[in-house]
Every structure is written in structure tokens, then in C-alpha cells.
Length: 379
Image 1 (cartoon, helix red, strand yellow):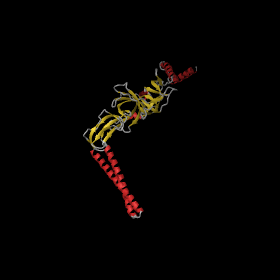
Image 2 (image 1 turned 90 degrees about the horizontal axis):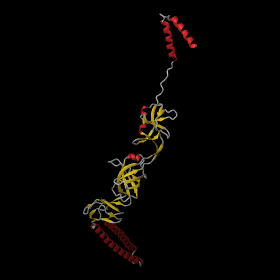
Image 3 (image 1 turned 120 degrees about the vertical axis):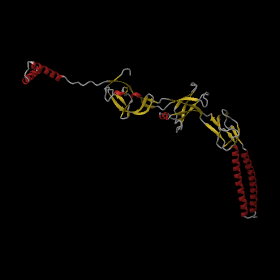
Image 4 (image 1 turned 30 degrees about the vertical axis):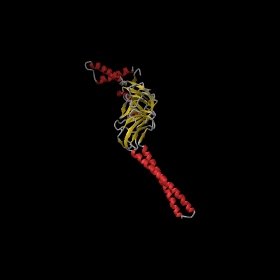
């Protein structure tokens, strides 16, 4: 009723201002008022926000430490180079590559004529020194008796005593020279310190070898190592001393053995830039021969970390981030994260996320801060 009264009042005002022209004014004015009235009653509504369907995953901390498969070869734990301690001409080599050797067994000989003569000369000098000592001792005893009888002076006895001490010192020196000569003679005979098998030879019979040159190489029977060349990333991912592993032959996977990492080289190979890792095998089967090509699965050190799919990763100010879904209002918020490393299809996160949070894994390029999302079915 109040609206009709307002319209009538407005029509009177308009009629007084704009008189009707051929009766059209009376028709146009109500139409204009109706339009104005409808326009005033219509409210301007904002469009509803776009709800973006996304795929997501609930992240959980778990032990991340996947095993790494590498290739290498089998080698003796201890390989010893047998070499002469003096220079000389090889006159005999008793063993060759592949032969077994026992501890203390003679494997090669040098021409020992010079050393033998030196030993014989030292023995003769020792006989002469002992004879001189016997003579000095007898002379000292006579002089001591004469001194007691006051036949000679104390100075004459001192001369005899000094001669006795000199001959004793000469005897000691001669004995030392004989011992040295005998050792030099023993160096012409090359013996193995431990049992094993000959894996390499470095000198032939008749060859003049310098001191220290490898004549034969012995792989000792004390143990077997699986030797691998691994990249630096494997060490950064958690490969450490004592890590467990499994080793098997490349051409016969059924032949396998368990082991653990006992040595990691601190320096990379200058050619391959990889690091040598030795895995000590426990009771390797007889079919694992030295030098055989092997494969190994090494367990990396497990850490309690969060792993997310690679498509979930985005950037914020040149820093890695992800979209986190708020469980209360189903809106997304971008959050910066700390990455430990990248896996082939995932990212290992060390900070920025907590267990139980939901992260968007597909559609991250179409999102903006605070946007509502709809979780797709079947997640």
C-alpha cells in the first residue's frame, strides 16, 4: 500500500513537470516508473567461487631407505704382493698363476752366491774373534797373577785388561756381522706368509729384479670381498659402514651370499669419479670364484621422512612448495618445504609437512591461495 502511494505521488510530480503529449506521456511515465522500480529492487549478486577438482594424498612419515643394486667383482679380502727384499737374478720360480700355496712355502729363489760368500766370510771372522778373545782372557789371567805377586806394575795389568775388553767388543761386532750376512742370505729365498692362491706373476726366471718388485701375487684364503664402484649419491643417500647386503653371481643368480659393508673409500676414482665399496661376504659358496662378475643389493640407512609424488611439487619465490588442503573448509594453502633428495618418481621431504596432512598431487598449476577444491573419488 505504501508503495502505491509513493507511485501516485511520483506520477503527480511528473505530470506537473512534463504534461502529457497526445496522451503518450501518461503511458510512458508508468512504464518508466516500473523499470526504475524493478531496477531498484534487483540486487547485484557475485558469481560463486570456482571449486577445482584435484587429486591428493595424505602424507605419512615412513622409513625411507630403498636398497641400491650395483655391479662389481669378487676379490680376495687380502691380496699380498710377494717380493724379494734385495736385488738379484731370479734363478727359480716354483709356482705360477692358479697354483695353491701354503704358509711358509718357498715360491722363488735368487742367485745367492754373493750373499753366501759374505756369510762364510763373517763366519771366519767370528772364529778369529773368538780365538783372539781366548788369548786375551789367558793373558789377562797371567797378568793378574803377576800383579798379585807384585811382579808387574798396575799399569801393565791395565794394558792386558784393556786388550781383553777390546777383543770382547770385536767378537760382538763379528757376531752382528754374521747375523746380518745370514739375514741377507735368507732374503734370496722368497716365502709366502699365508695360505692362498697365486693370482698374478711379475717376474720370470733369469730376470734381474730390484728390491720390492712384485714376483707373485697371492690371494689369501682368509676371506672374500665383493668390490663395487658406487656413485657419491648412494653414499649421501645413507650407504654406511656395516650396512647389510646380498650378493649373487651375474651369470648364476642362484649362487648368492650375504655380507656387510666393511670399507668405503674416502677418495673417488680419478677416472670414473665413483667410490670403491668393499662388502665382506659371510661363508661364500664354492661357486663364487675370484674375479667373477657379481651383482649386489645394498641397504641404505633408513630415515623417518615424508615422501610425496613429484607432480605435487610447485614453487614459491624460487623455493619448493606444495599445496596443502585445509580439512576444515576444503581450501588450499601453499606451503614451503625442505627437500632432502629427489627419487625417480618422488621427492623426499625433511621439513614443512607433518604426518596426516593432505597434499594436492594433480592440478597444482591451476590453483591459487585459498581456492576451494573438491577431492576426486577413489583416492
